[in-house]
Amino acid sequence: MSCSAVYLDIRIGDEKIGRIVAELFHDKAPKSASNFYHLCKGDIKIDGNQLSYKNNYFHRIVKNFIVQAGDIIFGSGKFEKSDVIGKGGCSIYSTAEEWSKRDEETYGPSCFGNFPDENLGEFDQPFYLAMANLGVPDSNSSQFFITTCASPHLNGKHSIFGRVTHGKSVVHTIENSKVDEDGFPLKPILIEDCGEWQTSMGVPLFNASNSTLGGDIYEEYPDDDQNFDGESFAEAYKAANTIKESGTLFFKKQDYQNALFKYKKSLRYLNEYIPDTEIDEEHNLKFTDLKMKLYLNISLVLFKLQRYDDAITQTDYLLDMEGVQQLSRAKAFYRRGNCHLALKRLESALEDFKKCKENNPDDTVVDKKIQEVEDRLNAIKQKTKKNIAKFFS
Image 1 (spheres, rainbow, N blue to C red):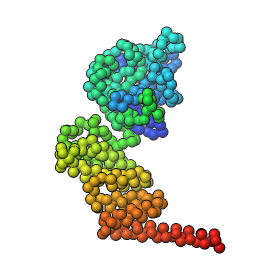
Image 2 (image 1 turned 90 degrees about the vertical axis):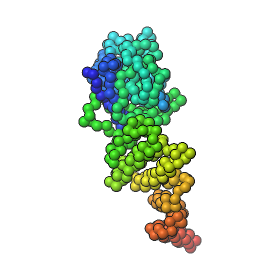
Image 3 (image 1 turned 45 degrees about the vertical axis):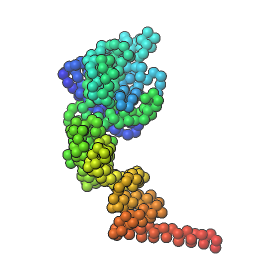
Image 4 (image 1 turned 60 degrees about the horizontal axis):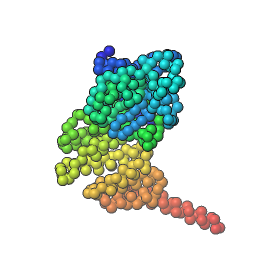
């Protein structure tokens, strides 16, 4: 077996996140790759104990460095922080004799089936899979980590046995999870399922869209993408705009959730590559104009998803920007007014609709909104007067 692929399906708390797919380097690191492969498949038992990454938790996260899991002794089952989590592990090379002696002090940390280092290469790029160890040579068991950036200080210290090929955004979601001072996640990050991966199985994703609709061939995070020259503002703008147009195609299909994913992705690219005015004024203006459109689009999508307060936040972002044209300001006030109206904040809605009218005097649609809200406020006022009159009669 020269090469195979495995998958890890990730859930954080009650939320499904998506699938990580990894290519294994059986030729360069045969023992490590075979160990990981079988722990993903869960097809080996030792002394009656099934060895598997399924239902194992990530227990260590260091942003801009690694995410770590694989302590199948102390890090599977119930999720809770303890003094021993991260100190256990068991490879497929363990023996029944080791298991029978696992409580004896002579075994120290509960890592069984330790096997030799191999492919102690260079961590010159992100998304390598490597074995965690006990800090001494040849102490690999089941714990592993995924790098999220180049980590040259690890060179020659850990066995590299694979790399992530799909689901890089899932790795970043894990990386960006909230942790305590020790890097232990505040919410359980669970390997919900795992096994051998075939292309026909796909790469499910639940907190982003990996659809290529509209020509979006780009990675979820711009640092991971190799489809364009990141040194070119023109190419970066093209990428951000293509992703935005993909979102618009989803919006036209009334697929608001995927439209939201695309718009947020476009905004991520935009914020990464927008140049300062002094460096490239032309592309600064283009990126800024795109940002305004994205804030408006995101606010509309969130309104459609009935996430009214989140939609208001997006309109606020736009209204806080400098140089926003009156028509765009009018749209922002109108959309914010609709959100307030949906939340029955009538006074705030009326205020925003009037500001919309100030910025776009020719808008007759907002006239109807103003009249509607004024009528509702007047009806409430009249009802209140009647109730007070009844109280004193």
